Image (cartoon, rainbow, N blue to C red; front, side, top):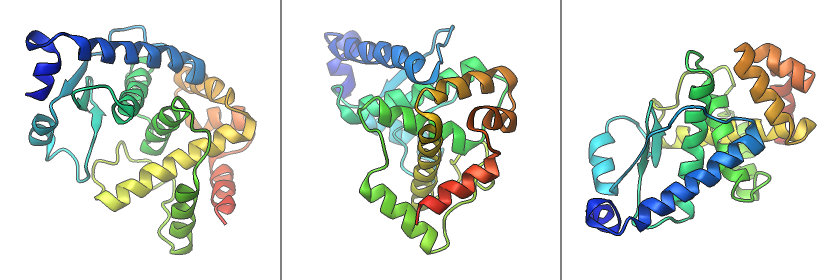
Length: 224
């Protein structure tokens, strides 16, 4: 396999060293942005793309670049690039949330929204871009925007490709909206309170001074 040649017992370990360095960077940024600092080891497996596709083809109805289910599993490459860096950052959030509250199932919009927000923010992206704004505005105009209630399933794995793309984007948009209400540092306060109390409604009200339904309505109104 290509990854075998880049690292592992057949390679120079350069690829593994790149991955470990990127994960260390992401680990430090988790604390900076979300106040999460996992106290246990997190296992990460990076697969040759063909192996990943073959092994996990039936797990999702959309094309997945990685997922977390006790172990971070990544559809890899032969070198660390921007795409792989983003996926590592994204999946590390899921692992960190699970480590902080292993018996608590977050609604998918929040779980994925936090991961998408952290992934974007650590790559220097602060806001939805024009294409993303247009996609959400178009979904609203066409009456296909999701409600947060419908995005509160444990995962988006049941969604088809187009629906999943919108669900992930809307989740990211909602978390970005929350971050804009009281500044990015509010995300640390929110995550800390949520992980301690396991109560989403109270955590939202405490940090953002409004209930989730009100905040959702404001977010949708801003889409035009």
